[in-house]
Image 1 (cartoon, one colour):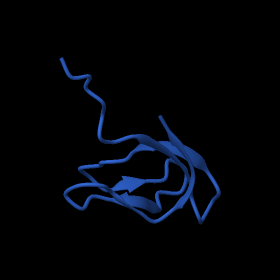
Image 2 (cartoon, rainbow, N blue to C red; image 1 turned 90 degrees about the vertical axis):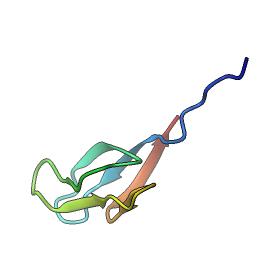
Image 3 (cartoon, one colour; image 1 turned 60 degrees about the vertical axis):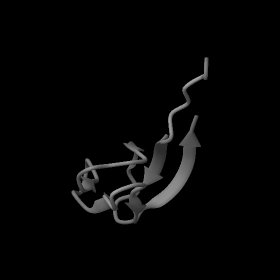
Length: 60
């Protein structure tokens, strides 16, 4: 049996506009916006997301 490991991770980002920190999924299928100021922080690309905010931590 093979152990199944996920190919994507959760990422802690900080919004460049209002400095809010939030967790996002690494493979988003929709545009992710900041929960406070609604600035776009991640865009879908068909695989891994293109992140436009500062990455603080990648959670395992």
